Every structure is written in structure tokens, then in C-alpha cells.
Length: 125
Image (cartoon, rainbow, N blue to C red; front, side, top):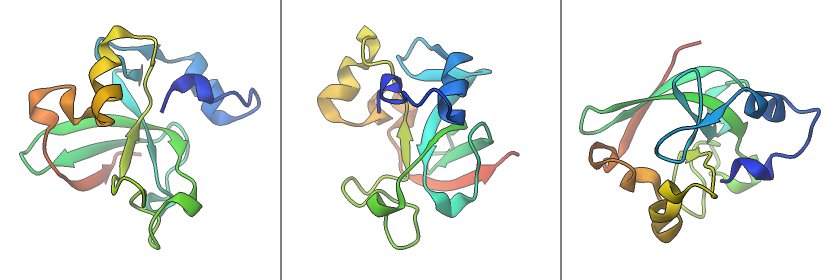
């Protein structure tokens, strides 16, 4: 998801983007954590921190940057039905670093240790 699609200037998502930056992977970041859209199952609010735990032991630090639409997720509001993915990273599509994501539609290609299944979401705050 490109951060430029967040255009409601009165939303918490928009306010967070104003204080965020594009990291070297082309993913939007806030306080050193990756901005991610996640389903309502997790009960998070925009700006809440969580860790994405991968099967290979990798931990990806994240911040809720957007809420997935419940109409697009499974009955538990965890996974996006179309992609079977529980996390959707918010990217800067104008960054050259995102070319590989756009080609495959998957940020697991961003780093070798990211190519692993999500096994847990650990809420930080």
C-alpha cells in the first residue's frame, strides 16, 4: 500500500504519515519501526507498536499505520482474503527500493530473513 493513498487530512493515519519517513527499504517508518496496516482482530489503534514474529525467528518492529477494512479480511479480521496476508506494509512507491515489492506484491523480498511465515503478532503498546 502506498502511503500517498492515505489522503484524509483529518485522520490519525494522515497525521502519523506527516511524522514518518521513507526508510532505505522504501517502507515508511516511524521511530525506527515499519508502518503496517493490520486487521481489527488485534485491537490496535493507529500509532500502536507491535512486533511481527516470523517462523525463522526474525522479529520485525512495526507500528500500526492503517487499519485493514473488515470487508477485505477473513471472518476473524486477521488475514486479507485476497492475499492470505496478515500484514500490509506501507511503502513509498516512488522509491526505487520498492521495485521488487511491486514486481512480486510481497515485502518478504525486502530482506533475506523476511522470507518466512508470520507466526505471531506481539503487541508492545
